[in-house]
Image 1 (cartoon, rainbow, N blue to C red):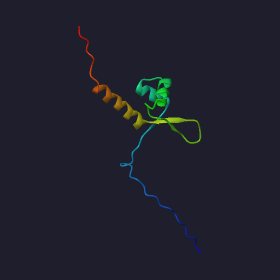
Image 2: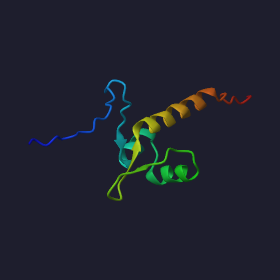
Image 3: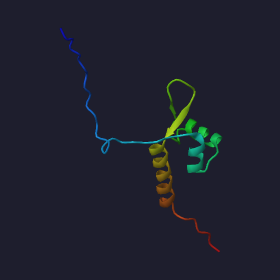
Image 4: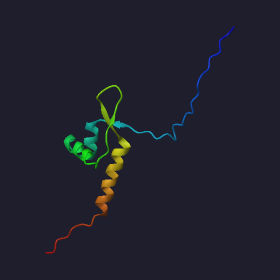
Length: 89
């Protein structure tokens, strides 16, 4: 008699609709934002920069590229909204 195997099926999300993001190392994040690692960690402590993601099985951490780029965009928007200071001569 032949045994029947049961397989669980999971719904797969089409790759076109799945949000994909890269995980960046600290060096890559620093290059994108122009800050030193110590500055990034200080901003994270203050709640002003995206938190890193711990990778399973070790001490490695990464930053989601989409979160870092959104932070950069937010800085650009805030900077563009601030009025330029003009000094009276």
